[in-house]
Image (cartoon, rainbow, N blue to C red):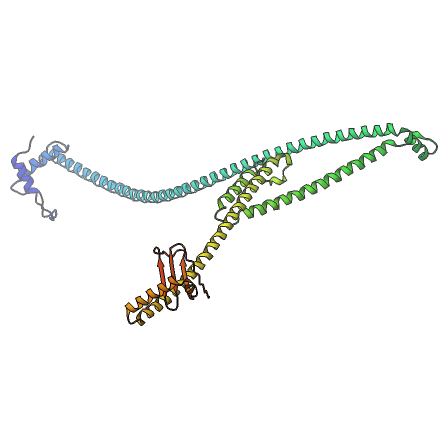
Length: 434
């Protein structure tokens, strides 16, 4: 049954205002009892309680129904209170669980950050260890390669030594065979003499007791000892020669590496040839003079030829430089001498010019001076013997420029063919007397 307008009015009238207690909330009064009863019945039916109640009846059935409805309401209220309490307890438990889980999450996050930092540190350490391991592996590989090269070199040296030993054994066998042949020939030639000597040495002619094998062994031992002594002497001589070659090579290298601008390139070239060619065939740092002759002969000869060519070139350059220095010194001395002569000639010219100016200033009449000069010139022309008696104090001549100055006590003669540049000057002073 839908609610009516009166019911809504009753709800609004019965709704207690906020802040009012139960005693102040008057839902029903004398005037609206019927409306309140009708509203309560509708509400009870809506919430599933028993059928409508007759609140105005006085029979026991209606009162019992009313009591049952009120009891059901009380039970529902009790259940609601219990449910609310359980819900609150569960809510508190959930809140505590949430707070505990949040703390656990924070702790786990901090642990995760620590683990991340540890992982980063371990990663860096692993990278460093990997790099160090890689470097160690490379180093070990290089050492292994070097060791393999050394093993190969040792094998080559061992093979060469075995070959030399076999060769020496063959030579020793050949020498022993040759020695046996020589001994047999000598025995055949001097058999009679040997028999007589044996007869003299061995009394009683007991040939069965002679020990000829021991004598032969002693003889062979003496020959081998002499051969070994000769070999040792040759080895010592070879060592001395190798030391001499080393010292000579060092002296030649020092001479070629001497500071000189003209031969620096040639010396560097010869040094580079030495470093390129004087290498051991085994690829190591063995001195070339310590190798056998058949292995290092070509290298030593080529090195010595290159050094001798460099020395010849260096000597030629030094001779050329010495000649150039001598020519330069001679030219410098000649220039200094010419400069000194030039300075002296300039001073003499200045003195003569001052003398000429004095003579010109002292003359009072130029015409008279010219007439006098003409008369003197005629006198010189007419009487050459008198001209030969004139005393010349000074004579300056420039052979290359045609300048001649002659000064007497009374006359000055100047002859100029072309202007000098004063490059080469020859000075001479002549005093002629009759």
